[in-house]
View 1 (spheres, helix red, strand yellow):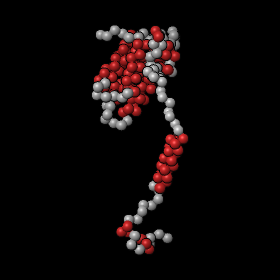
View 2: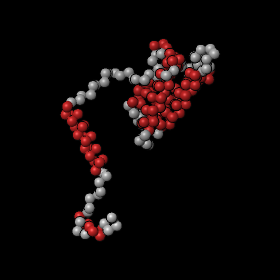
View 3: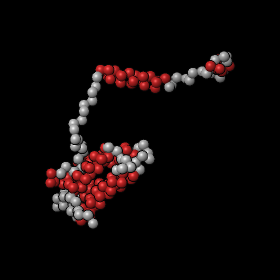
View 4: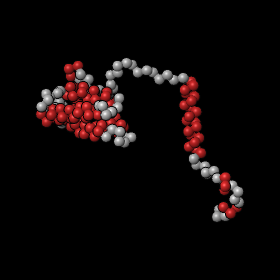
Length: 185
């Protein structure tokens, strides 16, 4: 059996998973990601089962952090399923993203878990990944803005036009209009 990881170590592994998922799931990393998610799940469940988190909220206080930690363990089932299903449905990347963000939000919203995640110079379950380089600012220009505004106008026009009656086919134009509209007042 693998050595028990601390909550901070588990969170650091989770950061690695989240960073890898930003690049997408591929046949080359799919099995590794599932294995890493299983490790997060098993290690965290072991922490919960051992009672290591029972006093995190303080003696006599409800074990809210334990409930949150169990929720993270349960979320790993969804994450493994969606990583395994990557490429089978257009919504899978969204589901993966939702689970990753949910877990980060759970830790960020629980002061005791946040403190555990930052022990020993860790920053586990961080909400924003460390970037190797600063993101490039969006190079907006007047021409780009005008193009985008024109695209929006054109799209709105097309949307409005869909409510107009369909054009009459050429072969129908020679037919008298009167018989076609007899049933209208």
